[in-house]
Image (cartoon, rainbow, N blue to C red; front, side, top):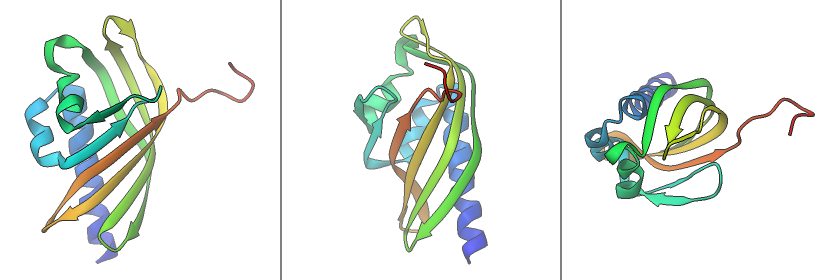
Length: 130
């Protein structure tokens, strides 16, 4: 069962990354929990509607978006996914490209997994860089 749950969780993370890359606002209806919260790399907090709204009107445009080195831990009906998020992104006309540490909290909603929380930190720097 552990392998299947991990594959399901990683499948959801990959679908979320594809939605981020494509700016697929409609996909968030099934990917994100209704009480979802996302915290960006500089501390802003967004609910599900606001998170999806970043893609409306061209506020956020991703040319590249990928999740690297995911590590999954399970706690009953909750899964934590710690990974690196690498993106080539323009946000509100400014370059927001880089690599960030990301933590996704997924929970079971019936038979399906949904993302309840995303926490970003970064951008990641090489030791000694500022």
